[in-house]
Each structure stands twice: as C-alpha cells, then as structure tokens.
Image (cartoon, rainbow, N blue to C red; front, top):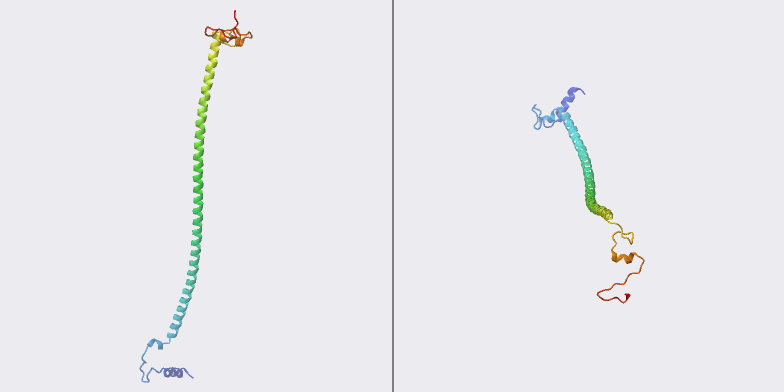
Length: 181
C-alpha cells in the first residue's frame, strides 16, 4: 500500500463527500487534520480545570473548617479574657472598698487619738496648775500645828488629835453625851 492508496481510501470513507469533487455539507473543521489535536488539548484543559476546581473546593473546605475552629478558639479566648477582666475589676473594686474602709478607720482612730491627746494635754495642764497652786499655798501659809497636813480647820482638830472631843452644845441644848460642868 502506498501513500496514494491511503489517500484515495480516505476519500472513499467519507460518505458525505460527493464524487464530483464538491465538499460535503456539515462542519468543515471536523474534516481538518488538526481537529483531533485541538479536541485532545481542550479535553486535557477541561480535565485539568475540573481537577483544579475539585482541589480548590477541598482546600476551601479545609480552610473553612480551620476558620471555624479558629473562630471557636477566639470566642473561647475572648470569653476567658472577659472573665479575667471581670474578676480583676471585682478585685479592684473590693480593694478600693477595703482601702476606703481602712481610710475611714484610720481617720476615726486619728480623731480619737487627737481627742485623747487633747484630754491628756488638758489633764496635764490642770495637773501643772494644781501643782503650782499647791506650791503657792504652801509658800503662803504654814502647816497646821496638829498635823502635817496643810490647811486644817480647828473644828477638825479632834479628828487628827488623839484627845477625845469636847462636848458641844447644839441648838441651846446639851447633848445627852455632854458632860455637865
């Protein structure tokens, strides 16, 4: 078989083509020698596109799952941080409350201390005044002859001395214990 035989044979295999040399009706690109190459190339491109689309879909699904997990983790961390912030705020409020109470207690104690100090200073001043008055009185007069105590009244002499008291008349009458002279 030669090249011419093949060429004639191929021409005979096409039923649409008439023997008078006119071309058959239909799509002319189907009868060109390049259609097979173009069809295979388009098939490979379509198949590659489908594979890429499937692969991208799988990756998109994985990324979506990762994003969902990340969002859950972020929500969990956010809730944890909010609880920590809330606990810290409560601790600060409690600390401020304690500081306020301690400040009030300190102020109250300081007031009491000031009052006690004033009272003590007044008592000390009174004590000094009394001591000074006693010194002046001691310098102005002597001691009573019946005792070592200053400023004894004569009516109280019997209480200090060892002698029995003398009877005293009361209201113009003598007492029952009074001695008659």
